[in-house]
Image (cartoon, rainbow, N blue to C red):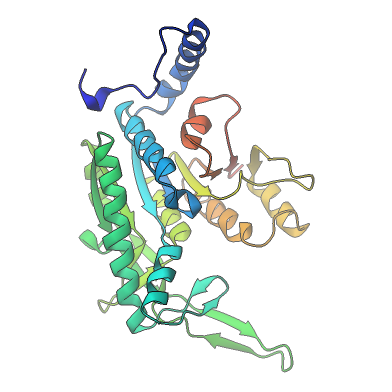
Length: 309
C-alpha cells in the first residue's frame, strides 16, 4: 500500500470496540461513495479553519480522500484576514462597504499576491503532502473567470437619494469558462483556485470567495457546493441547526429575521447556485474536524443543505 492509499482511519488492534465502530462507519459510507462517484464537488474553504494547522491538514487529507473514492473536488479559497494583516504591516488602511474591502490600484496588487501566491500555494502544498496532486490557479488562468466592476448603491438617510459607491477593483463574475476544470476532472489533478478574475480590459478584480465558488459550481454543474464557515449552518430561533431547506423556506427565514447578518449573503450564494444547476449547496462549520466527510458520508449530515425545491 503506497502512502497515497493510506486509509484515513487508524484502527487499534488492542481495542475491538474501536475496530467495530470504525468498520461500521466505513460500511455505512459505502452507499454514499457509490452515489457520488464521478460527481463534482466545489468546496469553498475559508474562515478560521484556514488559520488552524491541524484543521488545515485534516481538510487536505479529506480532499485527497474524496478524489481517491472517485469524487472530483474543486477547492476555492478565501483569505481576507491574511490580506488584512499584510496591509496593516505595510501601513495601508482598509475600508469596508457591506463587508467588501474597497480595493484601489495599490491594494489589488497586494490582494492578488496574497491570494494567488501565499495562500494558494500553502493549500496546494497541504494537499500534495497529503498524497494528492494539486494545482494552484486563479480565475485569470485560462481566462477562466471573466469579471466586471461590482456596483453598490447607498441611500442617503436625509435626502433619500441613492448614490453609487466606488469599491475600486472589487468585481463580480459574469462568465466562467469551465474548460480547464473539465479537463482536470478527467485526471488526478485537484484544482485549488484563488478568487481573482480578469476584466475585459485586462484589469484584475478581487471577487468575494463565496460568490466566486458559487459561480464555479454553477459553471461545472456541481453536485454539491460546500461553504465552510465558522458556524454549524443555518440555525432556527432556538439555536438548533436546520438540516434541510428548500429555496422558498430560505426566503421566508430571511423575511422573518431568522437568517440575518453575515449569513444572508452566504445563503443567497447557495440559492443562486441551486437555481443555476447545482444539485444542492451546504453550509458547514469548517472548525469541526472532517466536517465534509461527516456531511457526505453520514445519514445525519453536519450542516444545512439547501435545494431549489
